[in-house]
Length: 227
Image 1 (spheres, rainbow, N blue to C red):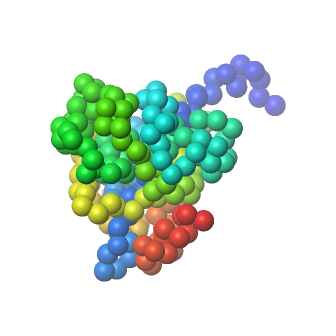
Image 2: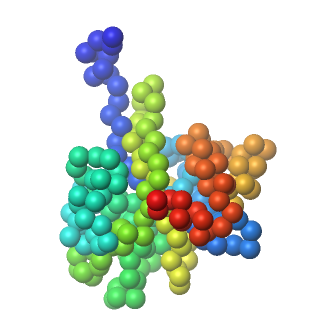
């Protein structure tokens, strides 16, 4: 049995959210994937947009639409703070891809400028949501898996994976700070690129791609993730 000292030495797994953004194509569903900066966590690897929960995510609960606090906790199998993970998923997706799961037609300010300010730390997600009275479409997120970094790693994350359909009329593009590249790609093609050594993929990303590769259409993929 591990000693109390050994248990306290285990790094805390920070709650985080990841979003698999998907769209239909002539072949299998395409997924929006990003390449991490070499100096970032999981540097140089290709992954899905996401990041850790922060204080602003709890501050916008009243704007989270389509799901209640109790429903969020139930869906994720947690006793509290489930809605933080939904809010973080929407925020991180916007920061890293520019795609916002909300009614963007109701927003008066320039989204690209706000995204730059948010990533630079000169504006606040909570302030932006409040001043635009913006409902966040948490019901567009379909939770499907949970990954926790093994205890041997110094940086650990407890990450919830969500699927979302690419909203009509929006354009996905990686930010220029933590990310260096992006692409729309099918799960089979990305797995093949990983096997060939053309891209670096970490284990949770590989297993997620293998899950998604089972579904030949976007409709089937969304149906799986939402049940």
